[in-house]
Image (cartoon, rainbow, N blue to C red):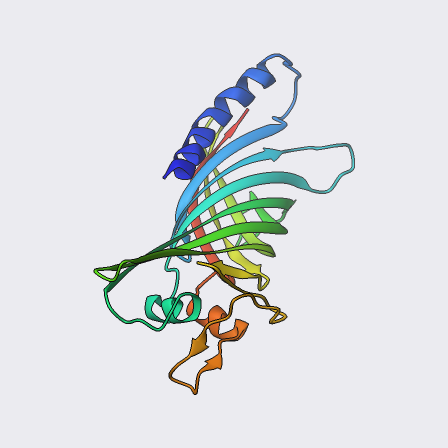
Length: 235
């Protein structure tokens, strides 16, 4: 909740801070900066704040955008998570919740899409921090599984002028994140199976669990489809 509050504060304050900065330099011509907020589906409910540089330099074909996002996700299978990261106990009523914060950098190319002139092709790298929280009420067990991932994404954004420097935006696309080490309790599983304090599967001859098992149980970001509605203010 603390990080969620920080995200909201940044999204609220950023337009005002940038407006003040831009007000000190009243150059004629199109706006060089804009800030936006959006919300919608990002494999779950998501919110996103961004800051865009327009007309970055003479002859540069892209606009550049920096963004910060939050998504509320299904973290995976609670019963399997307990077996793979803690123990084979089955007592308690499972509860779960998940979230991810993502940082993104995009290059934006102006392109008419679906006959909408003010549209952009958007693509760039991503970085995500994921946390799944698993609790077993009555079972005296509560632990988190975390990961940090690099990825890449692409999509399309349409911008519709509403009033003076205010735009309504529709964006959609797909982000992909690479497999990464999953850490929970005192156990971790890595893509190369250089694992730490591995648990054993009592339903399969006490064979040690592998990264593949952990990755199947924990729904860390992998393919992240997104559809967002928002507003953007030219500064």
